[in-house]
Amino acid sequence: QVQLAESGGGLVQAGGSLRLSCAVSGRTFRGYAMGWFRQAPGKEREYVAGMHWSGASTSSADSVKGRFTMSRDDAKNTVYLQMNSLKPEDTAVYYCAATEYGSSRAQASEVNLWGQGTQVTVSS
Image (cartoon, rainbow, N blue to C red; front, side):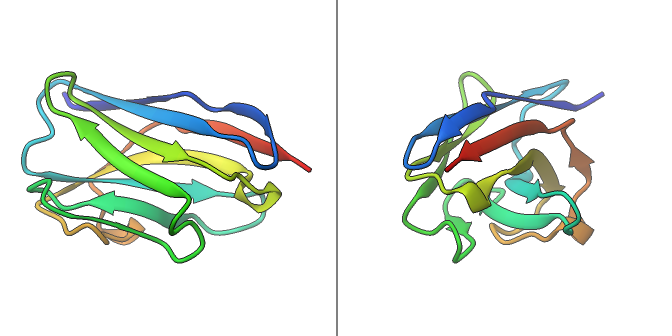
């Protein structure tokens, strides 16, 4: 059974950085587009960043472009989201997601598997 486990969330001041990790267990993430989504209180879950299933390309939402970077470590079967220059509006629960043979912009409706989420809080 494939499972996704996020870690690395926490409380940080505006302008600070965090790195989220998503460890994939049960199989490798080959054949899966990996993505990051977030959900703030009272809002819908939104796309943040994604990596094509081949690993050849990444994309990100306009709201985080230039600040957030997604990467992966095949040897550790782990994907990362490096978040820099954090803003209070980045506060949300961040979810790791896997979409079978998806693109780097796979949306929530296409996701096959979700992690449990990790809280990121940015104070002003």
